[in-house]
Length: 62
Image (cartoon, rainbow, N blue to C red; front, side, top):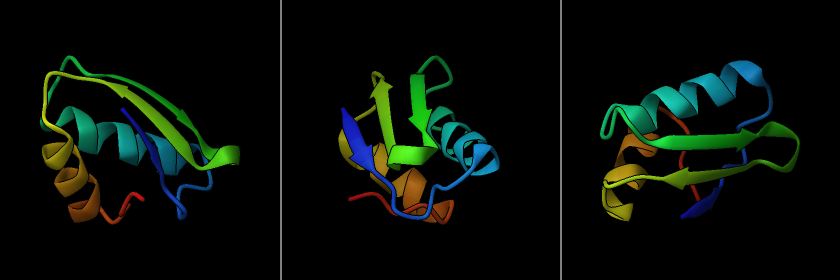
């Protein structure tokens, strides 16, 4: 799955996004790209679980 996260603008943000996703699936593969505000995720978690985790962490995806 892939998300656009408008307020992910730096490496610190990318780490926060990765940590949020891995809170619902510790084995998730996360590729965050702050310049494009995109994150690609390979996970066994549902899309809704990932969206909820990101939103709670302050990185609401689109």
